[in-house]
Length: 260
Image 1 (cartoon, one colour):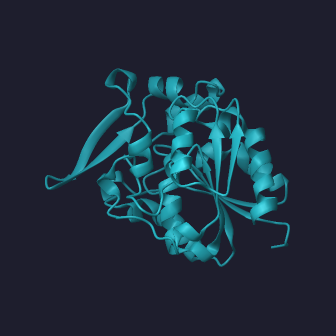
Image 2: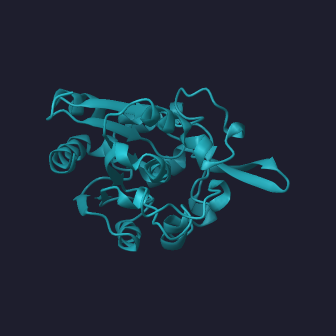
């Protein structure tokens, strides 16, 4: 790998998969970089079933396997709830991560449990606004676990309102039931460490038209554990990789030049 060539690892949010990066991958590769989009457990084409996921470690296993098999430093781009597996991996492999980019993402701190930033700073969505999103439980009676599946109406209103209709249709075809990482039901972790995750360079990208986590709440998450730099894509909805892929790639290339 040449000095100018960087390796990106792209992490999707809840219910999504590696497929959601299809517009970003060719642009980063055209700029000469190496790109891997990861399917977390029970996501995309990963064969795990959600019932097998008992912890963040289980959910993050494909990412941990990737980082454990290669000595190259990577830039992790974590979208939405992908911020939790990204932080979990950084706590284990801080020396392998040049930077984590939190794209309108839950960014944990090193004091509280992983889901704290989301639970503390993002208001609960009223039941009527959840529309056709479905929550269900699995696990055991003494340790019930929560999972979620976004519905087409919910995604159209809260996630994809500025994205091409074809990309919403793609999501309708490909979303899968995932653990509800916004709750503490899967963490099993008191907090991440300063010497692990806390030592890794972090950059946040705000999406200015996010209907799921509006900008004011993104900024509360950021202020809770300030990163090295904050960037913004003004007209991006929650799914910036669909609504503003060129703008997103421009920022990622800038980050690669600065921090990797």
